[in-house]
Image 1 (cartoon, one colour):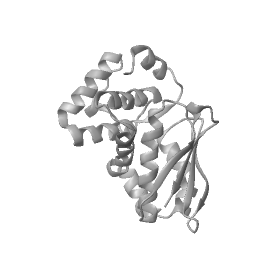
Image 2 (cartoon, helix red, strand yellow):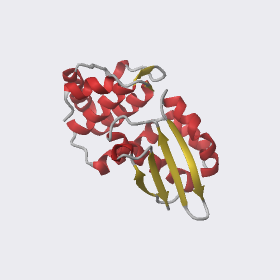
Image 3 (cartoon, helix red, strand yellow):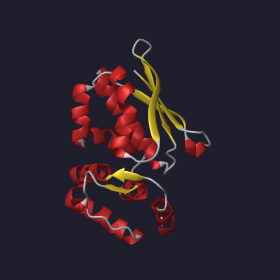
Image 4 (cartoon, helix red, strand yellow):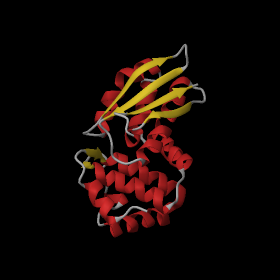
Length: 196
C-alpha cells in the first residue's frame, strides 16, 4: 500500500503527464467499478494528500508525473490488481483513448508506428523517451525501449499491456510481451520484446 511518504516522493519527481493519461486510467475504473470505484480512488488519493476529481481533470492539461503515478498505484492498491490485471488495464488505455484510435486508424503498421512512437510519447509526457530500435515483420518481433523513465514499477505492467494492444492492432495477431530490461532491476532503461 502506497504511503504518504512514498506519495510525497513521487510528487517531487520532475516531469509532467497529460491529464488524458490520468483520465483514461480512471475511465477504466469507471467502466469496471462505476461511481463507487471512482469514489474509492478519489478517497484514497485524498488520504495521501493529493486530491484529484475524475470529472475535473483537463485532458490536454499537464499534471505532475507523480500525480499520475499516485493514481496508478492507488488503483493497483485499492483493487488489489495483480500483474496480469495491471496489463489488462494498460491494454484498455487504447480503447479509451480517442488519440490512439485515430493514430491506429492512420498508422496501422509497425514500420509507421516505429517512426512515430517518439512523437506519441511527447504528446503524453514531458520526460523520458520511447523508441522502437528494432523490429521485423518477417521475423515477427519488435523491441520497444523507454529511456529516462524511472517513475514506479507499476508502469512496467501498465505499459506492457499497452504495447501488446498496440502491436495486436497493428499486426492483427496475438502478441506476447516480455520486459527484458528494467530500470528497477539496475538496467539503464526499460525494454520490452514483443513477439507474435
